[in-house]
Structure formats: structure tokens, C-alpha cells
Length: 219
Image (cartoon, rainbow, N blue to C red; front, side, top):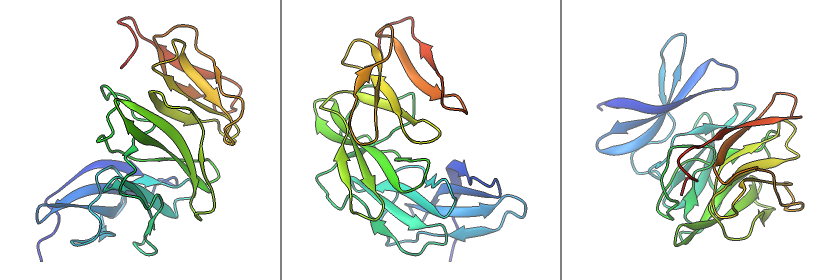
């Protein structure tokens, strides 16, 4: 059995001891975990399982990973067990959150979901076509799925450290940045110009920084 040919799009576990990566094996993408100290390789998805189309993303406690495949968000334990299709709908195009550098939002663009700080939910784009999407919050136990925004071009989402606020790019609203509560309440514009983007909270959650573009808003 030939091992993976290469690793890419890696992420470090919250405790800093492991590295989860996409890897190519027999022409298919799989997820592998390496022990950073010893370099031990463990395949936690294999040929024939849902083919990951996004970098694996660690839950805050390091127990689970999320990834996107087939237009859905999948959750599994870091040892490869208990694989769950969180969105469970081929009609949902799950789009990346928290990743800068993409061009216009497209329902076919797939990346990873953003975990809430308590690890109980993930936030993702639900593609609507025409470059628009809705931000949706889903609990990992499947009991809650909530749209947080109207249709728009939302991207680069970040939670406050305690999870009580969510800030993101607003590429249609003219302000550049918007904020909303995890229950979908208090959606408001918080940017100063249409070129503000890529917000990040301070460790204590009282402030956030962002980038100011000079060439117009990202579309």
C-alpha cells in the first residue's frame, strides 16, 4: 500500500503537538495527522471515504476536525471515528470562512468552516449563486441550524474570544465590515469605509483590527 505522496494545507492542533493536513494518495485527497515531535503518520480518512476539498480545521479542544466535501461540511474525531455530515444536503454549497485571498464569492468555492470558541458550533457560507451567500451557524449535535445574515457577499469571519460577537467582511453593504450576535440578532455595520476587510479580535475581545484596502472593496 503506497502512502500519501505529499502533504499540503496543514493546520496545527490547539495544543501544538499535531499537524493535520490534506494529502494525495492514489489520486484522491485524504486527511492525515502527523505528530510534530516524531513525525508519525496517521491516515484518518481513506480511499473511498468522502474526498476532502478543504484544509482540515481543528476544533478548539483539539478533539475534532472539520472539512468540506461534496458541498457539505463534515465533522469527525481526530482519530478518524464518528464521521458526521453536518449539513447533510448536496444542494448546500459550503464556502470558506476566515480565509482571505479569494476572488468573487462563488457557490463552487469550497474551504473549511469556522468553529465557535466553545467548540459546539461551526459557521459557514451557504452559497446562493450569483456570488451571494448566507452565513449559517450549525451546532455539531445537529439540533440548531440558524441563518445569521440576509443574502450578501460575506467573508473573512472571526468570532470574539468568548463567542458573543461575530465580525466579517461585508462586500455589498458599503461599510466593509459588519457584526452580528451568534443568535442572529443585532446585525450592524461597523466598518468606516467600503475597503475595510479581514477583521481580527484582540485576545480580550474588546477591540478588533482590520485591513484597509486602497484599490476598492474585494468582490
